[in-house]
Amino acid sequence: MEKLSLDQLLLMVKDMPVLPESIHQILRLTEDPDSTVQDIEREILKDQSLASKVLRLANSAYYGYPRKIGTISEATILLGFQAIRSLTLASSVNKLLIQELPGYGLKKYELWRQSQSCAIVSRMIARKIKFKKPELAYVAGLLHDIGKVILNHYVAKRYQEIMEKVKNENKSFLEAEREILGFDHSQVGAKLAEKWNFPPELVEAIAYHHAPENASILPVLVSIVHIADVIVMFMGIGMGADGMAYLVSELALQTLQIDEVQVQQWISEAADLLSDSRSFDI
Image (cartoon, rainbow, N blue to C red; front, side, top):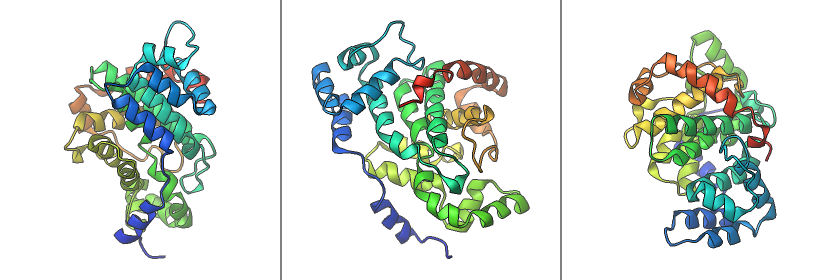
């Protein structure tokens, strides 16, 4: 089997999953300063399954609100428009991320748990360093490995070749993926983010979460997701076939003005945040 050409990749992009129009509408409403709480609640309540998922996440330790949130309007008022945007998106992409991905050695639900964990830790880090858009960090963490869903089929077919290159040539799974297929999951994930009309800084975070040194639009966001991904891997969550094959970027540490001791401290704090099953059971 030959490497995928750029044209073939673009054809793949055309066939990539689309977000439902209702989700796009909610995302638009949460970005519109003229929107009201009632506008957002009305749209979310059109899908009772989505509404229940949003409330379940809103009541998880991830948000840490001291009393039970019972309605979408209450969640919107207490947590804010950007948090509702994150919750809605997480509820929507959950269906994509729960799939089994044999190409990456991930059982059903493992990619979802890994992605949601990375999202939660990304938001935690963003708050720690006073990054002004913690919910953007959450979304970047949530979608950082979305390209695996698309490339899984191709990786599964060439899995043995990829693993041999990893073992025999001391390459990362990402490098082997790129050499054998022609593309890696980060590049494909970025294409999907573009298709979903996400902002350039979010596309960049997905594209370069393994290579923060390539970031130019918003390096701090890329570094947040990179370190969050490292923390989640160190914790052994959803590692799959390519887990522990990546080095911690010194540039990412410098960008966030932290050291490895700080990363170790964040691992302990992340364990508490990730202990609430409501963050994952949607």
